[in-house]
Image 1: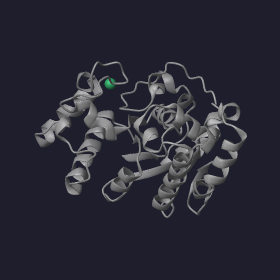
Image 2 (image 1 turned 180 degrees about the vertical axis):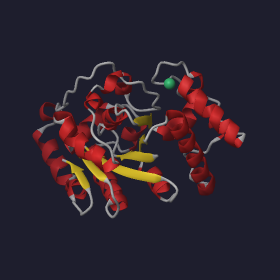
Image 3 (image 1 turned 45 degrees about the vertical axis):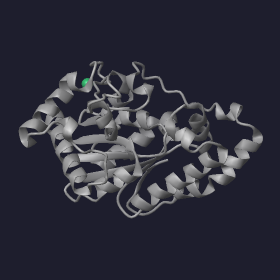
Image 4 (image 1 turned 120 degrees about the horizontal axis):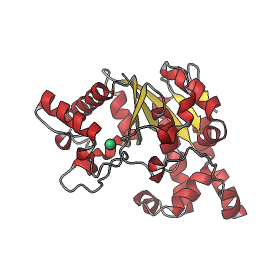
Amino acid sequence: MKIVYIASSPHSGSTLLDLMLNGHSRGFTVGEIRQLPRFVGPEQLMKRCTCGAPSILECPFWDKVNTLVRERTGRTLSDLNIDSYRDLDACRRDNRILFEAVGAISGAAFVVDSSKDVQRLELLLSMPELDVLPIFLARNPKGQILSMTRSGERKQRQFAGLSGLIGFYSYQNSKIDRLVRNRPHFRVRYENLVRNPVAVLSPLMQSIGLEYEPQQQNFAVHERHNVGGNRMRRKTSNELRLDESWRRDLSFFQKVAIDIGTLPGRYAFRKQRPRIGAGR
Ligand SMILES: [Zn+2]
């Protein structure tokens, strides 16, 4: 089983790509699985599964995964260390246990992890027993940054101000580029995915070793139990609309500042090397 890992900045369209990959008959998404502890921990900071189950542990899919993990290890999903790097050996072991159980229950040829986080990708790539294909996803920085400023989430406060967001875009893209550039991976530009999904998904599926299926565009109707991600993961419509409100809502000077400031990040994404597919 292959693990397809989406690495990107926040607000770059990872939920859409995640759902389109889940739409493949041989694919299955676990979403932003690094957030699993928030769903299964004692406090249950987040609850509902995307399938509609009131909690992850009441979801038929995750219940089976939980039972299998217990049978194999004597522990449960809430005992697994998925996202704490203080004990790297335990974190690697528990992620392997999780992926093996998800693979066994889903029967999928590839599982999508859209955690986005670079540190997590680094961890998974350091495990030779896992077959990981990184997907480097990037969005036009003007759209990504405007979307960040509109969201009330933690990341946005952390990088408050336009210059912070501009720096974060370049920092994040450069970090992903450094990690993936010398290994097989695939680059996707979000705008191209929305404008022409077939042109992006066909070579992307080939890099996974499978053929594109038209039903991937009916992403909203497929069963899904992904964890985390934005509201789009609950969508019931397949309609695609490119949000280009930045053209209207950013001032001329903001656009110029973003264009100049994000040059290093845009350059890091555009760099093209041999053996690499490109959906752009
Ligand atoms: Zn579910």
